[in-house]
Structures are given as structure tokens and as C-alpha cells.
Image (cartoon, rainbow, N blue to C red; front, top):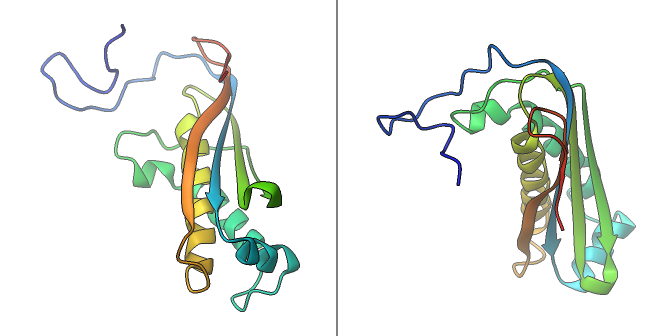
Length: 158
């Protein structure tokens, strides 16, 4: 098992030095789900929510969150992301919305945390906009699906 990269030999937290790493194309995809009552999902799909377009707001929130990841998570490097995509997929059969966040850049460190943050905040935004009509919602399944680039190479969840 490898050691934790954000903890030094004295057990103190620190930001990893990436100065000597090569710039490579990197991408990460994360997913998550928000489950809700069928009527709530239908309200979102039909665009009838009093607060406005839930999906448009969640998409913008996810994009903003990815860009602010280093402000939210203490040891993350600030990154110049070149692409952020938030896909919101209604899944009526499961009474939920699937969320898929993709982040890309050419840089020295990966973008997994940015993709996870984007998926999480998109889900939280849907929750916030719909909590008045549905107190039963739950957010779950936040995880990295795949990453590409960097020294450790490509990885995909099974």
C-alpha cells in the first residue's frame, strides 16, 4: 500500500509539490445520483418548478464548483480547467437524476477532485431547489468513474 501523498514524514498535512511533474492532458469523470419522489422528478422534467429551471441552475452550480475546488478542499492545487461538462440525466424508472461531471485540462495534476466536487454540488443544488416540495430526496453514489493522463495512467471503475 502506498503512503498518503498529503502527509509528510512527520505526519503533517502539506500540499504536494508538483513542480517537477510533466504537463499532460488529463481528464476525470465523476457520477452521482439524487433520488426523489416521482412527482418531484416530473416537475423538474416538465420545467414547472416555481424556482425556475432546476437542471440549468444545477449545471451552472456544478461548473462553478469545479472551478472553485481548490478554495473548498484545503490541499487541492488551483487548476486552469479547459473544459467542464455537467450532464443531468432523468431516470424515471429509478425516481432519480443521474449526474455526470467531466473535467479536462493540460496540467501537472489530476482533476478527480474537481469532477467529484462538480457532481456533488450539482446534486446539492437540485436538493436545495426542490427541498420545499420533497423532503425525501437523497444524494448517493458519488464516485470517480474514470481518469485519464498523468504518470499513473488511465483508470476506469468496474
